[in-house]
Image 1: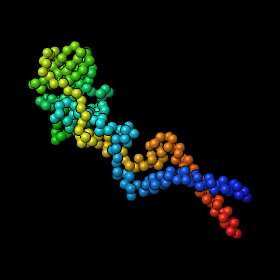
Image 2 (image 1 turned 90 degrees about the vertical axis):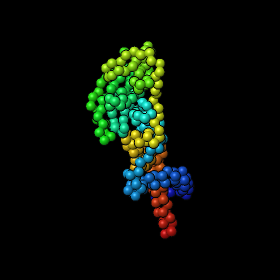
Image 3 (image 1 turned 30 degrees about the vertical axis):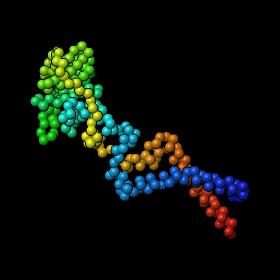
Image 4 (image 1 turned 120 degrees about the horizontal axis):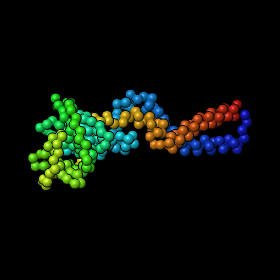
Length: 253
């Protein structure tokens, strides 16, 4: 098939500029493709990433999402709606708790919501927490704050009254003004990272990240289209190179 000199010039220019424009994306596809071909060599399956941006990208919790409840010396941790105590999972809730405290002399954790209070009674054996009983109390008025009095008694506050918790089934009105009211705090970085690993694993596998870099999903549909065009441009470059090679051979003959 004969092609005019003008058409050959246009084809050469297309070959040149298509190659130039898409070269970086073709390089990107090549590198990620090689990594996926040899995952063991690049440790894709044994490497995990816990970068805050990536965790948010994959809708996972970050260290900033981990909350420490109760007193400073009590290891009660809240991750979204899941409660942990001393590295043991306690429960997952429909609502986010206001706070929680551990009652040492009863081996119990008291979890406070705006509309109810739940007592978790447990047995502890060699750092393993086994919840043995759960008592739930529905409140008539919205709970606002939780605190501890001088004698370590638990108190909670509603719009109308302060209440002292006597046991899991009995609350009494109180005028005690000497109550330290608590709020949820962010967990320290090391503690947050520890519980994140317990809750959602080591993070995001490098294999998953490289796979989604290769197909463009990690950066959205627009980048996926760019990579699709890059793949098509590579096909065009191969065919145009083949065409120039044939024509060069014919010219020599």
